[in-house]
Length: 219
Image (cartoon, rainbow, N blue to C red; front, top):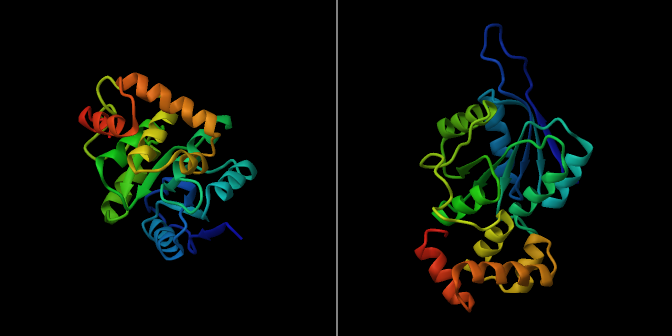
C-alpha cells in the first residue's frame, strides 16, 4: 500500500496558534525519513494530517482521489520516475496545491531545476525545525521559499520547465533512455527537447551543452 495517513492525536489547546494547513502530501520513498518528517510537522502544529506516498504514480493516484491537499512536499530522488515528473501532471488539476522540493542534494543546479519546474519552494533535508516552520508558514501565505530568496532562475534563461528537467538529467550523465524513463517521455520527445536546448546554446554535443549551461549559470 503506497499511502500512509498520519494525523495529529490531540486538538489544539485553547488560544493556540491555528494550524497553517489541514492536509499535506509527502512524497518520499525513505520510510524512516518520511514518517519522521510527518511526525515533526504534526509536533510543530503545521498540519493536521500528513499523507505519505512513495512514488510519483502513487502520489498522482492520491491527487486524483483527494482534492483537499494544501501542500505537496516532494523528494526528487525517488525510485522509478524522478520527483520532478509529478509537476507536469498537476497542470490538469483546477487548483493544484503548491509544491516544495525536499532534497538531500543542496547544490545550486538542483534548486534551479526546482524553480524552473514550477515548484513553490525548496527545503534541504539537512534543514532544521526552524527552516521547516518558516517554509510551511511562508507557503501557506502564498509566498515562495528558496535558499537565497526568490531570484530568477538565471538571466536570459529561455528554456521551458520540461527542457530544464531534461538539461538537469543530462548534466547528471543520464543517457536518453534513462531520461525517457525518469520523465515519462518518449525518446522522440527527449530528442526534440535536446535539439531545442542545443539550439538555444549554439552547441553540437552533450558535453558542450553541459559545460556552457554551467558557465551561463543555468546549472
